Amino acid sequence: MNRSELVRRMILNAICDEHKSVDQVVLREVTKDGTKLGLTVERSDIVDALAELIEDGLATAYLLFSTEPAKES
Image 1 (cartoon, rainbow, N blue to C red):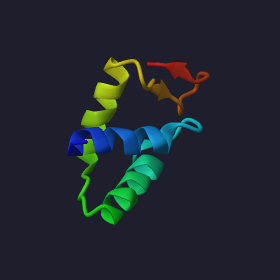
Image 2: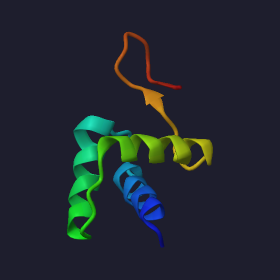
Image 3: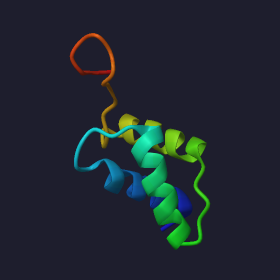
């Protein structure tokens, strides 16, 4: 498994239970897991991987903080 696939899997693990904020939860969890494996994972790595996961249909982005109910974006 290459680095990119490993980052994607760590992100899926971080978001699998519920909606999560990239900056508040996903970044913290993925960088922590990456550190255990000797990887430095930057926010840009996470954003890029999330975009790919969304394009591949494996993740969905939602706008959670607005004046209207949460909606898929």
